[in-house]
Image (tube, rainbow, N blue to C red; front, side, top):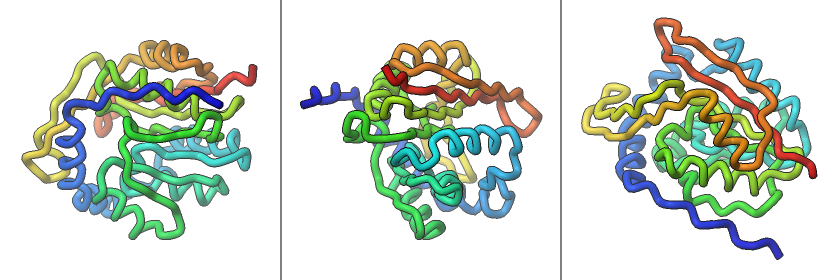
Length: 225
């Protein structure tokens, strides 16, 4: 039998973050739909990263999109033929995902509350969805993902680049929200991913372009031996 996975620390602001995303969910979806921001096909480098992940994972097993929001990335991966499902801590986000993409599977869960069997997933995705995790909690979540991946499975992470922690009290036209965006340097993320037992295989750095802040995408693989 496998040893039980270590318990992950519960972020102190988890409830506030969940409630904040519930508040902005409908406005966020409206923004994605009216601007086209939710269509990854508009962003060639990000699409290339997502396609590389999809091509690499293929039909080797189930994939989990952690922090899926209204489900647009989950749906794109499903179109690519992956056996993918999405989870998000916000019930309102999941309601939107189920409404917009009824062909896909979604459920409510925080990244810190997931119960994943060892070596049960071919792929895990954290696509601009893990930056709210406190700096001492992210390594624990990465370790959970590493345990859940099959040998040879892949992890794809996209997030904001920087040194600071930014507290937001207004977002997507709503005030009274509260969450912290923890920004990371790419080399820090690579160190954390390696510390979880995964081997980075590709990295894409995205500079600020006047509309979006700097970002980084890292793909990593679980060793087969």
